[in-house]
Image 1 (cartoon, rainbow, N blue to C red):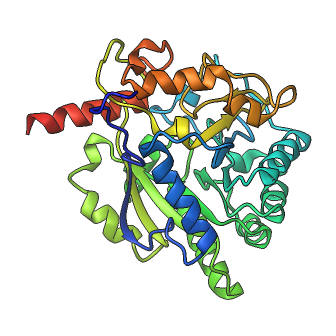
Image 2 (cartoon, helix red, strand yellow):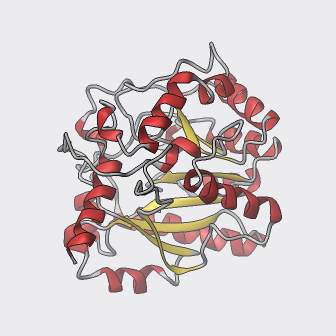
Image 3 (cartoon, rainbow, N blue to C red):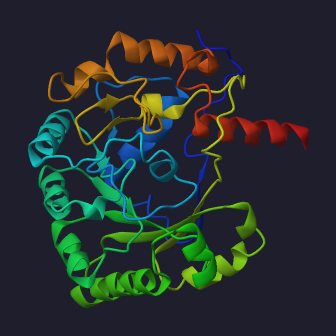
Length: 332
């Protein structure tokens, strides 16, 4: 039995700021999916199959953002691109097991993949209700945007620190402020011209300490330009805080799984070292990995509030940031 004091909070680091909440839709299947997204972790319910899979179509990135593991662990993360056959295997098994959605990235930039539009179209053709990805939008040209609209992409999250060239380019090293802004505006104009309501575009920033005082201006700048303005809590990713104990459980273990470009199956999307790997999708089924004893033991440990006893979870930047927020709140 779990400790009654164990805290499990869904999307606690993911904030809607203004505009349309793109996670609210007038669609009964989508509503049921989001209900389960919240309810399954809160009740420690393990469904027969994950609701969602983070599919890493590539681990490569065209930027070198200093706060990202893809940059500071560049020499340790193998670079590659997922073959279509692997993607098809994932989506086909998912479609047969009521998978609701996929996000086409974990550690890399999905628009680098030459078949990303094909991937989106295949997932939508198979009936997935929530198909999206995060992007830096440097490669989101008008031609690419039109193809993504035609493929049926449901939503897209664009990472953008600040609202000025100086701040943005300092944090998104290798990006060009004017190019990304023009690409976002072109996507929105295309949707209007084509009469399309998708993909819903969310611009979000990691709330770095230097952006706190100007965040209201950030909201005012982006609100008229996109469907939703959002914010993610800052997570210190370079320095792991080992030995942090707190009765906290990670909701991802009851919602989703991750699959790397090479087919490695992960129980979450935060283990970038592979210490929790459950096998390879080219050798075992996703359903078998989801219901494996290794997965269930990980859930049992978190359910008891003992995540720090798991080597990979001890120092996980999501776990650290959420626990530190809770500890800070206790002081006030």
